[in-house]
Image (tube, rainbow, N blue to C red; front, side, top):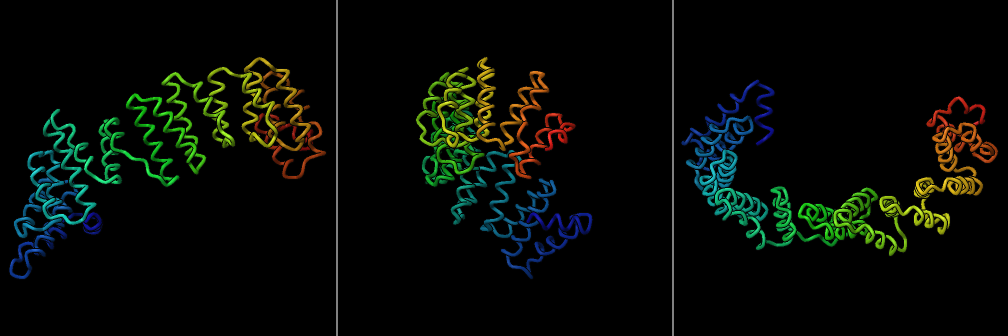
Length: 364
């Protein structure tokens, strides 16, 4: 029903050829049985609606129902069009008529939700709970669909009362993320933090873990309980990279630089991802412990001489302090230890910090 009018307009420049053909089918009472004429009129109604001719679309749907009052697609199309036109009472009656002939469960749910939304508009304050009340009678999957609709109507508390996160880990992570967002909107920050934290634990993708942890931090900030989030991190046996990154962020936000540094100094090399370790090194400077930071960099360069990350990090720090000679000295011994791939990575790192003219001198 959507492609046909577009194809007609694209080929002929107007809807006229399609309208003429459908109109001839509608008017041929002798050659076409009622259901066939109703189907043609219904298609005409959708075609006109598709192109924005709502009043003439309504006439087509009415013609369909006149030809065959039991035509379900005509009933449904007519109800939806009246809804779109804002004719609340007429649309309610049309939805009731359509529901009387529906046998498909998914369509029935869709129509009942639309009917409940109309009741919310029609009855004012008295009807505001119409959708929630109706949804309470549904199975979990359909309640969840109704909850999403309520959230879009800026009723997050009602949505939370209906929504039930699914059990399968991948789906549960996304559902809990959605719940956390609603809880924040409903001024339930502690609950939002808990939902987001659980989402971060069951998520299978790093992107989803980051989203969940960002919401968890937001919830704890709103509740004034970032210390409680640090306790969550401390209870993890094997924190993911995303949890380590978020842990560092919370330590930074709470100005616990010494605690962050203690994490770095106490952890074995394999316990913290290199990128996370680099971030922790930055906290030395934020804690006013520049000498310790430089010593930590030097030790990392000594133990992993071919890892460009340490040398480039140290180079950036020294350049920010105006120590160009020291930044270049950070690359001493790199050429002797590096493989060809490391040499290329090192050249790129020097170029990124504006030392591309030194690449040849450093033999990188």
